[in-house]
Amino acid sequence: MDHIVLVGASAAGLTAADALRREGFTGTLTMVGEELRTPYDRPPLSKQVLAGDWEPHRSTLRQDTDIQRLRMNLRLGCRATGLDTAERVVTLADGDRLGYDGLIITTGLRPRRLPFGHELAGVHVLRTLDETLTLRAQLLAGPRVVVIGAGFLGSEIAATTRGLGLDVTLVDVEPTPLARQVGTWVGGLAGDMHRDHGVRLRMRRHVTGMTGDNGRVTAVVLDDGTRLPADVVVVAIGSVPATEWLAGSGLALGDGVLCDVTCRAAPRVYAAGDVANWPHPAAGGRVRLEQRTNATQQALTAAKNLLSGPAEAVPYAPVPFGWTDHYGTKIQTCGWCPSDATIEVVDGDPQPRKADGDPQARKFVALYKVDGRVVGALGWNSARALREYRSHLTENSAA
Image 1 (cartoon, one colour):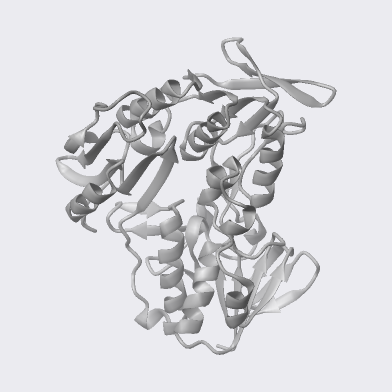
Image 2: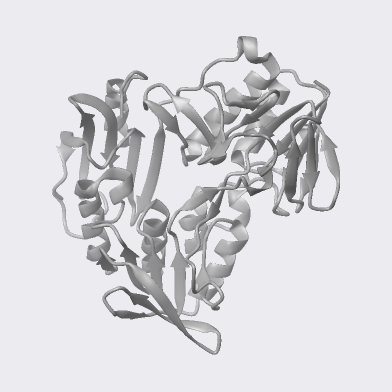
């Protein structure tokens, strides 16, 4: 191969570039990125950057000199608009056409939006560093904040904004925060933590509209008629894979780019990170993982498999690992934590043993079981203990 193109200036894209060079690829390497920024880390955006604890540059994944060592042609601020797998050409928004011998797709996600309200000033989504900085600038005015969506991202945003001393309400259709991610039992503990820190929860509620005045949001309307006063609204209702540019490409698309077990989507085309969807033997079907650790691990596999070719490609079957931080509490998961699993606490105590308000008051490890088999584990302020229980998780566990 003489020319490999990476579409997506992301953590996965940068990892793939690193891997390609380390594996001995000496040809031309081109990275296409929709943003003007070089690749940066997204997990700190809803926490350290939004809180103002980090300067924006701290989220950058590599210094300029390190990126220069990769000898890449950077096409930043330029969106990919099409792909022709037969001709092996990526089309860019500026009309340029990039021929390739190998392609790795790492375009990640786009935030879901409500069918209303986004035309109002003060209504935000949070995916990019620029969106984070815009939101933080408005938070400095001390607004009343409503966060719609109590998954990992929405819960982190609620915790961060409350940490800034703001009036915060968290809304979700589920009975507890994090219900889809870790189930309602752990979600109930997360809800208690939010309440203990002064966040108002509106669970089992749908948002039906927003009101505004002079083009700026004033309230969020719920399905029971409640109006939540709001100067700033953050919509965190999930994301969708950024695959719209691949329509008509010939690639199989569904919930992401549909790959085989080696991350291969088509001849000489691979995908990695949040956008990749592939069959995982331990999951009993296809999966798409929105986890920072997966972005790195899968990009390494995709890069190596692209260079080695299909005959020598290896399957990608990781044990998923993720984390979230709220009010100084770290919640980590490994494997699968389905909401209908049986949960068994095997280490520590889910009941606080210290003074109220201490983020380290609750420490435990819980195993998630389906049909008697351990499929996942969760650690609440228990990183060391959780590592010991990861041995319970095998690649043959079924979720």
